[in-house]
Image (cartoon, rainbow, N blue to C red; front, side, top):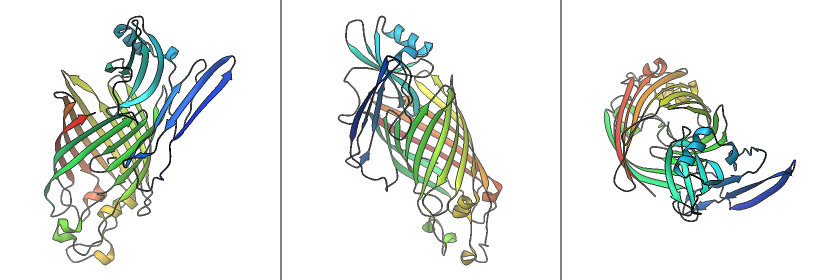
Length: 364
């Protein structure tokens, strides 16, 4: 499911600096947070550490990386690009949906630069100090439009064509994504073994719509769900794996999902390919909410049905190709195989969901 909830409380920006001393070595932590601007939720954290390493975890903090402790592959990439440069600050960032490291430095000529590096040491982006990012709030924003075609699994619905706007906002450990649904995620921890994220997802299309087909007349239409999740993620060379647990907090189902995924990133020329395979366990409450039929909704051609927990297996391929300027072309193919408890529902006509989408995005 794709991944902010409308009930996030409005809060005002805050600023604090902590200066301490540990065994004659000091560190400073600068955490800056801002609230809503024109309806957009944002916040920003930054850490500068000298001396002993420190971890600040929680909703307003991420993991800082000491410049002195940059992994060899990242340090080598910096030295190759800017010989003789002095690294002034590093921090964990998120760029185009993946975890990266931002390095701020002073080049040999005295000019300041900011680099975004992948975990493998690839230089993803270079900008002069003060350039790039959104004014006032920082971060990067991508806007676009996608056109998708989908063969629905529900009875009598058939194939649908959808046009959806796309928004991706990334600022350090914070990411907000909207397409079919709305998701906000925050990287709480980045460590050598795994990364820890928390997320909130507002799911606006949790099942069928009554006007999709005459078959659903007389049924209660599923509403909007809010899923809170915790995810463990790890990247190794070109591989990425993830394990996530989500809980419905909307009060409609009290159901859960557990998702296990494995992805591989391959760059061919200027095209990035990302094949991914995922296995999702869905609790009985969530399955019943979208695919169950109550006794009050039953009729001769639509018998009552109370499913149990089930699984889904999804295979998908994402392709990203830069175009002229700040434009990029995206393509997505997906196939989802439904488990037996879902496929046996009288509401389901196809137990394999197929979809394809193409879109254009502009990154500010």
